[in-house]
Length: 93
Ligand SMILES: [Zn+2]
Image 1 (spheres, rainbow, N blue to C red):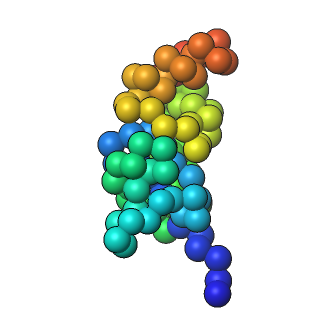
Image 2 (cartoon, protein in one colour; image 1 turned 135 degrees about the vertical axis):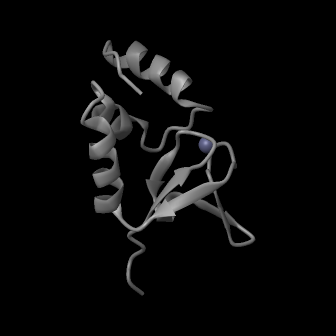
């Protein structure tokens, strides 16, 4: 079997990680932390292409997204607060 290269990401939370980390219940991908729905992108390259486009005009956004890997917050505001508390950096979302 070839490795699943997809990236799974929360639809209603900030969690994202490789697809093997996602929790699948009844065929539905869920965030392993909060158990809310997840979606997929095809691979890490596609994921970071999207991130880079978005990050082009937003300070520290790319670093912020890397930081959120495997971390579940209810929304970006909570994630940004935690990111800023830990790194001392602000981020535009
Ligand atoms: Zn979550």
